[in-house]
Length: 406
Image (cartoon, rainbow, N blue to C red; front, top):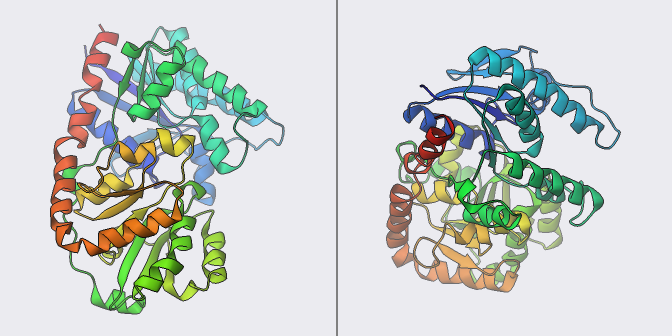
């Protein structure tokens, strides 16, 4: 019997995020295993499109067919909006599951997707798997909408634990999250890691810097520390800027290139101005996805200075893997999510999280070891080729799904 998997996502392409890129990779991997996949998004996807939302209940994006759930009016009452979202999504999951004759419901974070899927799965007699990419309560802390230990935090944690216990199987993205899940009383045999990975064929070793672009940005003749992505507080870009005065004292030609945007954009610009280094930090704003490679080629040392918090200690990011796949040299904080990916002095450099002085020291060490960079590039690329490619990662689904669909 063919395994017919109905995926329930928070959002999907055409929105671009680490979430949507991982989702596509998982779908490609499951199809390579011979599964049929179907794809449904929550009302949050439609809301995320804003004025671009067309209200269609189904559409095609880059050759992928998606079922959509209509957006809902926003409620200012605590919990009401989430309850309405789950009720609406539950109805849509049941409609689509019946239509496509799903044999497995595959709900992805957040828990707002898992709870409706569990209700439908029980009603229709379909097994439900829950894939945890991050815990909703920890994401809420990072976004500033609650605090760790608050009533909302505790209630959300209880919802997550309930979903984990009720799911027929749990998938997650890294060992840090798996350990936390097992610590909640979930049988370790029911938790499988599907590690973040890369499509090796999609990444070529970095090319030569575009001289004209480098000059236009004021980076000609400079050593460039860079970050390309979203400017969230947990990324720790404030640490990189805080380190810059000390770095400039020893390496006057150093510059910082920040490509992207996000909630911390204004704060980072203000910090650079307050420290008197605004002319040494270059903010490009968001750039078209097709142009990102040109900006990567301008960077000598990619920096991922994430702050230490539950989210970063537990969750592994995609960006360092993509950097290694491109043969880039990278420096990162030693939070748990990075330690699962980067071997200090072998595939990159690690500094003590939240320690500006150690960040300065490791940047200096890395720049003094330029002769070793080809070796680090090769070892990083080899790591993703052998251990962190999507075909190896998604192969872990086969045994679980075959057992559930017998």
